[in-house]
Image (cartoon, rainbow, N blue to C red; front, side, top):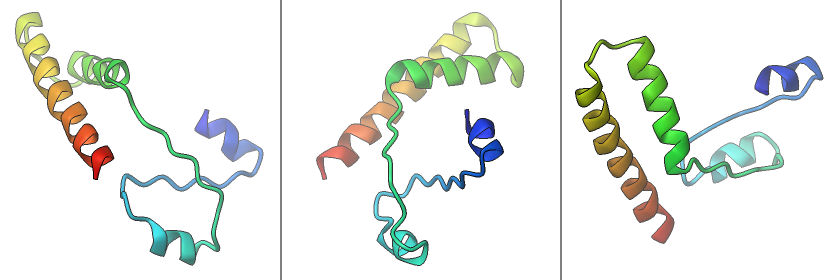
Length: 82
């Protein structure tokens, strides 16, 4: 999807920073779209990475995924309340 945007001349800047006021100011107040991953997105990403890049048995992969998803979604939840 991002590659397609590049082909039509769109410029995309992504950041995970919560406070991006300085970035917006420096870029001339660009259009901003918030994209938030849900737990399924995080699970798909982690399972893909664990399957391609790291060698773990299925039981340990599931433990790793469960732990990281719980921590990631907890962090997002806490940040969204602030």
